[in-house]
Length: 197
Length: 127
Ligand SMILES: Nc1ncnc2c1ncn2[C@@H]1O[C@H](COP(=O)(O)OP(=O)(O)O)[C@@H](O)[C@H]1O
Ligand SMILES: [Mg+2]
Image 1 (cartoon, rainbow over the protein chains, first blue to last red):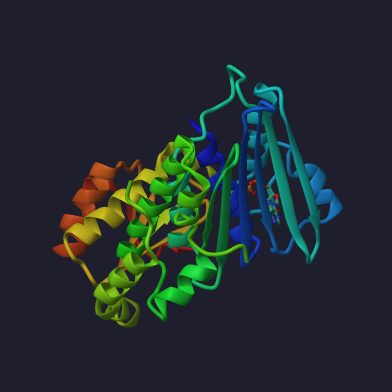
Image 2 (image 1 turned 60 degrees about the horizontal axis):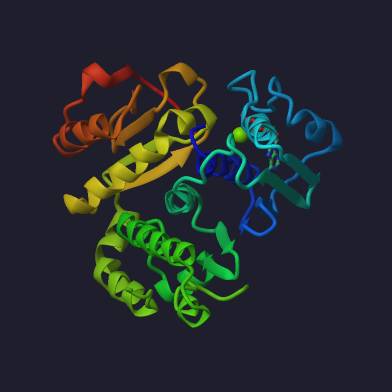
């Protein structure tokens, strides 16, 4: 994978495949602590101990179509290259919590990539019942995006309509640009697309 | 700096309300972009976004776009399956956004299968 947003897309696809209806993505760019944190939490069917231990083994998959499971082990590899770590916690019937840590300024840390496109690709491809919450923090700047809130506003119009998807993509892009620039907190409030649900 | 306004979302909503209802009700074509690990690594996300942009540009209100997991043919990713109502699905391989655009123009709009990009014509399954 070229960048971390593609890894994240792949990890979220696992959550969707596990039947999750609430998927939370958290990115924290802690410049002072020189740490990049990525969390993906879902309420899908989860994994038992055996699947969990095998899930970061590159030769493991429970899907019949391919003999080699790749996604999680590739992310584990990406964290290792940047002196970080991958933590996967899961409970059958409860869900899965994945935390990836990277040394922020490590020379081999992959760039974040296009998170707006990753989030909207997930929305475009999932059941309209699935909800995504995306929180991105850089220093004291925060962007929050929540499909629950958007769906309320859409009032019955499908969120995965191409025109809505592309509009949301632009909005997320602009919101992320704003926190990168370090806009004042009051301004950031206007970028919040949905409350902390 | 342009600020996000929930009002903008509501404007778009009202604009697409009619076509969105049409799309859900009687889609003539469905495109499934395979978004498994190998597909993502090979550029499937760009193929999907390009497709959505072209659908918006051409104002096609009877085409549905969705994604699926790994199709089991990792070396031929990115892949997409095109289903026109009443016709057998067609699987396209080694895609780029440019190839996807040709498929949209020729197969989805005009009904002519783009044989040079197609894998096989038959009873393919999407999951
Ligand atoms: N969020 C999740 N919820 C439940 N099971 C998961 C989750 N993520 C991964 N798994 C399990 O771990 C296996 C390996 O995942 P992955 O490395 O992405 O490979 P693949 O998706 O190709 O099987 C999956 O087949 C699945 O059984
Ligand atoms: Mg996977």
